[in-house]
Length: 431
Image 1 (cartoon, rainbow, N blue to C red):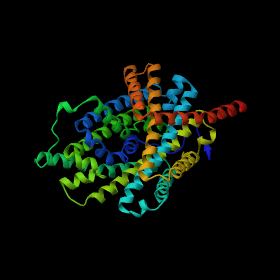
Image 2 (image 1 turned 180 degrees about the horizontal axis):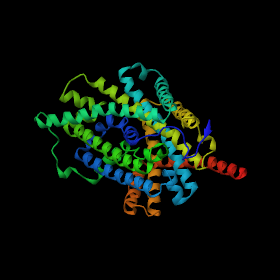
Image 3 (image 1 turned 180 degrees about the vertical axis):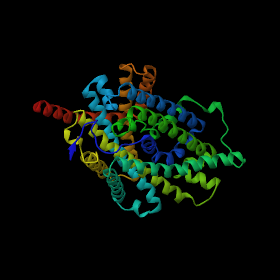
């Protein structure tokens, strides 16, 4: 083990396509296979909810991209907040984001096991077996990442290509049945669109678009980050938003509401309705692949973030140690161990209960990063109009996440303060 600085970090890095795959692969996880059922009762409000969420997310993505160009020395979101507000706020927001990554790794792993249980029902009926299977997925993806960022990036590209196949298939199928008249969309009635329904739909769609910041957070592992990170951020966010909008709107508007809302596998129900019965298991396989790819990308992030924090001096230097290929082995192993603890801690819950609890915790913790980076852009006079809109959107979504989730995120932020103070005290003593 050794420690390298940003300029001298060994190992091959992610190119533009791998960085886009990191963003899209992390954003496209389990949600797209389940959201159409949740959105079906909202009708056309769901379509406009997607549009609002995509626009809000693109505004935040543009803020991150602009900060990357305007503050190249800052390198990543932790650096943006450091330059604007100082070390302690940067530590708190980075610490919370690290917590959100542990939660995301655990929750998406559990979602993958949930899909697997539809093929192997024994998993769902055996106590603690779902959590054990989820831990197996976490550690398998950790082994992939221990081979280096290039191996993880190539795996991300492969799984992204596979998970896009059924989504593109749904879009093409919808276009074909609408074209030949064998299918139709729910008629649009302006009286059905209202602020309450729109807000509810937008709150649901927000969860599906978390992760657009991944290339910025992992900027140290991206080739030519000043150019590739902004491009990957915008392209990855826009393409993912478009795929989600088309897929979820097709299912929600073309299936009868009662059918879509009660389906445990709405994409499979859509394909079986308009094409061929018996495709449910095939869709489950693709859903598992989607979860595996998302876990791989988030595992990469849970090693890269603490390494970056340690290089900035807000975590102990122990976390900055890398192997000969530039892989933060210690940070990866510790993070995966904590994600496994999350799974053990919640193992007594149902699979759906584990998934929902961890997903809500991950979402609320991530929103603080969005808010502080938007405020940092405002303070540093970087795209101030977009920064103001982005900050307002982040505050709105924090409120939408609920007081319980927000309260837990604040408690977890406070829990990290002693580690920060201990790190600073050791550094002062050794100076």
